[in-house]
Image (cartoon, rainbow, N blue to C red; front, side, top):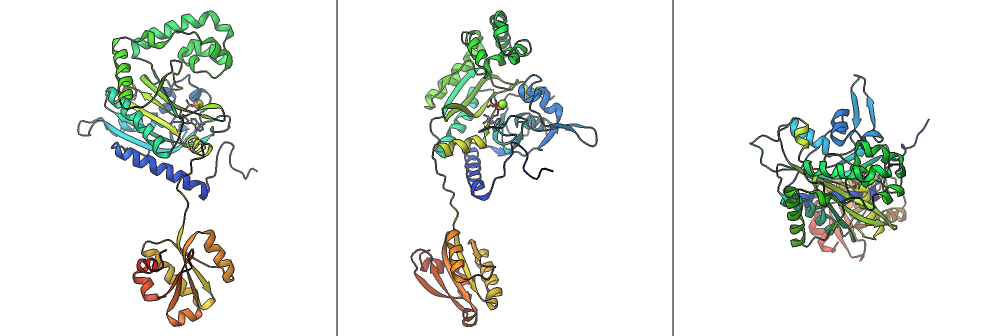
Amino acid sequence: MKLQKPKGTQDILPAESRRWQYVEQMARETFKKYNYGEIRTPMFEHYEVISRSVGDTTDIVTKEMYDFYDKGERHITLRPEGTAPVVRSFVENKLFAPEVQKPVKLYYIGSMFRYERPQAGRLREFHQIGVECFGSNHPETDVETIAMAYQLFTELGIKDVTLHLNSLGNTESRLAYRQALIDYLTPMRDSLSKDSQRRLSENPLRVLDSKEKEDKFAVKNAPSILDYLDEESQNHLDAVRGMLESLGIPYVMDTNMVRGLDYYNHTIFEFITKVDGSDLTICAGGRYDGLVEYFDGPVTPGFGFGLGLERLLLILEKQGVTLPVDQELDVYIAVLGEGANSKALELVQAIRRQGFSADRDYLGRKLKAQFKAADSFRAKAIITLGEDEVKAGQVRLKNNQTREEILASFADISSDFASLLSQIKA
Ligand code: ATP
Ligand code: MG
């Protein structure tokens, strides 16, 4: 029997989860500034929600799904990404209705599941922070959403992220390009990786995205999508580029970037950074104007991104960014003797009720061990409570740094602990 966590999963313990909370909180605050609201969808979906929208030939669907049949013979999958579920929910809850303000701006934070080979920054259960914006086909929306991710990275203190930009154009442009790419790749079919030989017939654009050496070599001189954009597609891209420049958001055009999902059109982008010399994508997204219709909703443009939380934290760590997450305790109550136990409980509760963090000894330890505990909890103040103090109705309250101390009555502790703390400047 295996009593260990499944391969590719993680336990997030308190010292680490504080960093997660900080990043999540920063994301929530940033998204709020852009008028986004949170959506929470189920962790599992009907298989079809993912398979057809993400694309029948993508790695996610062909190799990486955690799917199973439940006891009612329904084909279920743990969600591998956030966009398809959110679009499903958008349609199911009729958020397209005229009385719902447009654009509809939604974000999510949660687990995603992919059956992958685990390695640094690649897990089987991982977490994404993602956003989706429905109802605007304006290039301003593309730029605003990219700028929001950029602002989040800036506020977290991440350095050296490069924005890679490309356009897949509209359907006509993409079809024209698809044919050009087939014409270019077919003569060198045998030199492609097995996967890419398959992609060439099923989904040729994805050959550009391959990480295999032979494929990277083959696509070096491939035609560029930018030469196949029609006027509408070109205008959209030009507008996005112009606005990124006017906002001072640096980017590079990356015409070999096509993204792993099938549903994108026009603008696609990734934020890439280097970790130990190799490129790692932390955030990726783009425009998906056909997806709502695909879920039987009315034609509704969409734009969004997904951001890997583990990768973000990995990069923060590698770049030596310290997050302000050290936890302190406002007060620790050292308890001496059985007779002080119930008073200790009363006091610690009274202090917590007033909004302070407080803890106490439960183990009847020697004072020295208790003071050590107070230090390791980074207690700002210490109360020492023994049977004598219980009788006297007052205790010593001490600043754990400066050692400055005062006498405090139980009544004052229960009614105005804040002013006692300020007297010892803790
Ligand atoms: P990759 O090319 O690295 O496999 P992807 O194209 O499959 O990425 P997306 O589906 O665009 O990734 O997901 C968005 C983001 O989620 C990625 O940029 C990455 O930060 C994160 N991500 C994707 N898969 C994993 C995983 N298995 N473990 C951790 N993070 C992941
Ligand atoms: Mg992948």
